[in-house]
Structure formats: C-alpha cells, structure tokens
Amino acid sequence: MNSPPRIVTVVQARTGSSRLPNKVLLPLLGKALLARMVERVRAARLSGTVVVAATTAPQDDAIERLCRREGLLCFRGHPSDLLDRHYRAGLAFGADAVVKIPSDCPLIDPRVINRVIGAYLERPQSYDYVSNLHPPSYPDGNDVEIMSMAALRIAWQEADRELEREHTTPFLWENPRRFRLHNVRWESGLDYSMTHRWAIDYAQDYDFIRTVYEALYPLQPLFGLEDILELLEQHPNIVELNAAYAGVNWYRHHLDELNTITPDQTRAAPDESAGPGQTAWMRS
Image (cartoon, rainbow, N blue to C red; front, top):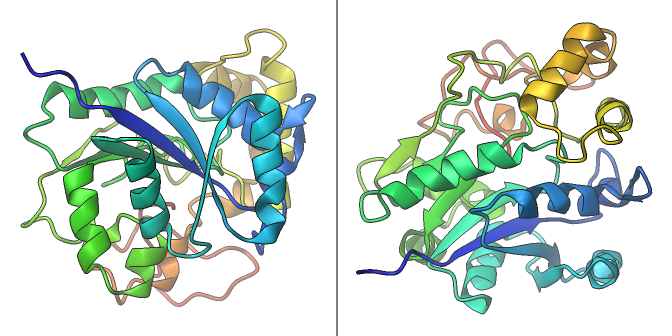
C-alpha cells in the first residue's frame, strides 16, 4: 500500500507590500496578522507541514523573528520569483505536493483548506494541480492551490514569463492540455468570489478583517466561513468597510497575457484606471 503524499503548505509572506506595507505584521487581537492566519492554516488537519516562506530581503528579518517567537517554520527565498521560492521550500521540507496559500488570507477557513487538499489526496495519481480558483466561488480570501512536486518542478524549469515566476502557478493552469487540473467549487452552489472580499491588500481590508476578528474570535477562535456570513448578515455595515475593492486582483493587469481567464470576474481598484473588460478570476 502506498503511503500518502507528504504535504507541505507554504504561506508566502513579505513586508514590502506597496499598497499596505507591513500588512502581515499588523496587530490582530494581540498577535501579528500573519501569526493569526497561520493558526488557521495549521488547524486544517490535512495541511501537513506548514512553512512561512519569506523573502531574503533584509526587511523580512522581522518575519523570521516573528516565526521564531511563535514557533513557526520559516524558509527564506527569492524576493520576486515566487515559483522559485515555492519550489525550493518544497525541496527543503521533502514535499511530495506543495500547497500555496498567500499570507493575505487571514480569514481563511480550515475546512476549505481540507476540502481542496482532500480532493487532491483522493486521487493523487490523477491530478497535477487542484485549486478552488479556476473559476472561484468561495469568498475572496479562501485561496488554496495544491500541486505535485513533479508538476512544480516542470514549471520551475520551464516557466520564463515574469508573471509565471512572480505568481507561481500560471504556467500550470495556462497549460490545461499538459497538466491534469481540477477545480473545487463551493458546495453551497453560491459564488461570492466577486462580492465578498476577505483578503488584505488595502487599509480598508484591514478594518474589515480586524472587525470580524474582534467580533468572532472571543466566541470561537476557529470561527468559520458560515460564522462570518452570519455576522455580515446581522451587521451589513461591516461589508461596506472594504466593499469598494470587491473583485479586485492582479489579473486585471495581465489579461492580454493570460488565456484561461474569463472577462467578467474582476475589476479595477477604485484608485486605478482600467479599460472595459479588464477582469479576471484569481489572486496570488
């Protein structure tokens, strides 16, 4: 009987965000936002070895110090080539499959992580890449991608476009004839990916996330997706804190380079200009 694949979950993190510098270190109920997020990732029973992958930039020494204080594994790699950083983190920790979760998802539901990884583990010989992002349906900020090390190695060796190196997985999902891809949709049948923004890139996102944490964490530290939705139904004013950025992601700048993106699933940020149809479906 074959042993199950060794899963390494990589939470990529940096302090150098241009929109909201040091966002991963912002306080969230007495701890750094990154530490709170990793609590949730580690609570997923299928997440395996959880590693924070920071950059080698000197300013990210602060992330390594945080990991040391919190007892978290930390790997440091290329500042902008996230494909290289994920691949080398997978090698360093003996991965058979690597899970990619960005550090801007502090409200991610552990059950969503389990569902995506579980879909891969049910048929590890049948899939090279599984995500809940192609197309998305969960509220934005529940981003999970898992790929075999074999597929990640091919991408690492062959991907040569800047966006493929910077965002890790485009080489895989842009080659559906070459890689065996699978998507996990929200079992509710709903699609909140464009209307519910639970990720952090802007100050308004932090206001939203902090409000949700302060309302739910004291009642249940591992509150889930349904708990958040119930809170927002009871207090719709919370949704308005960052509603202006719902549906905003990096793909809007690369639609002419991407072939597997539909033109109705993102929009420009309020402070950015965008032409008609500049839309996409996924975060990184």
